[in-house]
Image (cartoon, rainbow, N blue to C red):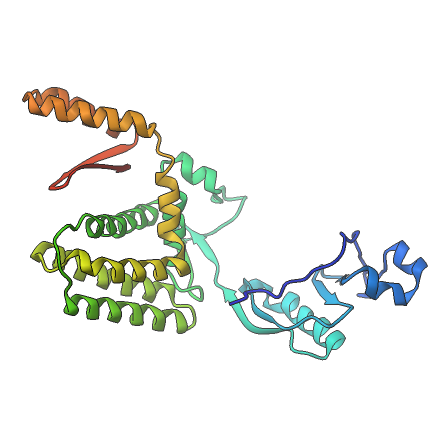
Length: 311
């Protein structure tokens, strides 16, 4: 689905401004005459007194935008101005759907530079959190509801995301043969619940709830030995569909590909730890584990061996 109608032109426009909303042509267009405008440029920008920008395709009128987003504070006058200008110029609807997002508040206060409670992604990373956790937190509330950003809520988002990635890792570690129709049916239910949530006014909070219901079912199936390698394709397909919409798992995987310690060193230390445990030097094994943990890498032992993940 196209989220915003593409606007193309042959070369960049200069800045066009007009306090009363009238179009100001570039000098070369004015010199060439009105007929040259359609062949030379596909886009004219109108800026009214309030700073609202409007794009108009002069060669052929712009199709309606599929989804137009913005904060609730932009409904009036900015978006109303956009509608009035565009529909007066084109005679066509400006946008099919409007998505107005509620305010983000921080620690129960309005986000404001004067209060010193505005944070950038580098600020968050500097505190030891990852961008994927921020993305998860923002998705955890419906866009029409206020989201209260706190460091505690970000920690909770990180923990939830770890539960999700741990489940995916457990599924990938399955080696038992066979497939289970009941499990496939449960996955299908989860996929349907996810789709219904997204189709219900982009309810990402409910969509995440549907995913975690499936996560619980998958973990139970793994614990009970009621899952086999024949079940993996349908499970992978489901999580692929989830992530095609939310983009959380793919972001986390990209982060995992750049750990705070070189992958070669992590693997070497894991082997050193295994060697220490084989000779029953548990103090040395613990030192390796603790050293990696202090550097941001966690080791987890399981039936299929030791795996690592970022802290």
